[in-house]
Length: 429
Image (cartoon, rainbow, N blue to C red):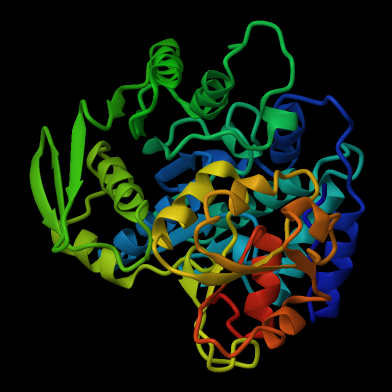
């Protein structure tokens, strides 16, 4: 599967067309290609300001958003690279607080693609090389880097001594890659996932994590010991409790009373606390309690339990958007919408399990409309059960809903979520 990208800028599109033509040889593992590419570019990953490196199955993007918001609230200039993009490829590379310009992006991608023309790098390897190259050139105080897939063999794992590494929630996803047979790795699926994510641990850099089932905890502990990374796990080195009025965070440095994050969802206090713990378990950059609180109030992270504004797509209907596509994400949606009725508009890649979203929402669903995921292979309506009906696209699916006052949820894919944002003129900035 490729991360397709389109741009209205012809110079950018010329480079995105080159990106789209890249492919990864089946079975290729390791960091040799990205390291060679970065060496040709002057090893920019060794010239970055302090980096916060975040892995996880679910919540890593939200954790990065919290980190960015808190660091910027303190007044720092922050480089950020996250994936995938929702509407524009530029979203993947935020330079000192601003999305990279089209003009600079076209130049940068051309430089990186030319440097790696004989290496057959992947789409993501080129993206990370481009991001790190720009981050090394433009002054900033710190970086936030989201792992793309897994951790151990992810292109971002060339980072040598991050300020702190974090692991968000763990679950089963991307099984074809993360559970591929390999000698010397755990057999239990969740343990294998933990093994892959904890592969980002680095000597001397704190490894800050949530709490996990025993089989995953053992792998995280082993990775921390193997790499000489001080481990800070929730329930041991730090704790968090949430009430209707706020968050109570505690660790060896003391206690913090913080507001609830503005991002909706039962999981966001945990992601926010992971960001706080990462900031407090490193010695490179200081962030005050007030800046953390302001970050929790100011944070934005599109397409994750986002209520869309009234617009050309939504009209006056209450429409929620979430790019969730795995069982962990489905469980969060089920909890958030428990006791409510809603119309589900879903589009999922054919490599994903439709039950991941439908089953947790079963008691809430008033109707199911199944739509294509633009540019990708997707599940037809039959995969979602006999009550599911096909629709040509999100626009027609919403237009066909009865005027019954029930909200709609568009979910199943971040690619579909990006299309919904585009159609509603809510382009991430």
